[in-house]
Length: 193
Image (cartoon, rainbow, N blue to C red):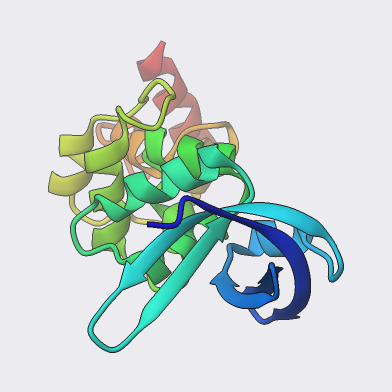
């Protein structure tokens, strides 16, 4: 098992790098965040995840052990494979991914290539208490809720004020929809205090 590779970046291709380790070139897939930090000629140490299948042998690399651990956590989620987990890490720095999971921000997670609504919700449900941040969301509410009306300007207003979509929808649940957007937001804010 390869825990890490230490060597020189000899080339960069799309979302991977070739790392020369003692004269052997290893192709290693990396997240966009790590890719941006690597330059040809850099000597680096990448923590490695090996994905071995009957027809392929893929290496995934991470500049920090914390990123590798978050990647391993993402892989533990049902129906999340190595490429999807890597695309989730590509949406931003590790703390952004952790905050999205702990905060139940499904929309941020869905911005990763290959991640649909159900996969994003599953990540929140399974990892919200494991990512090292305090969870601010009721995971059962994410799974059981109906679709959120993102066309509702009042929902957008509450999201702009710091609510996540689920909490904004919940706050507006009992508010009369015939009122103006501004009045609906005011009433939603009053009901939450």
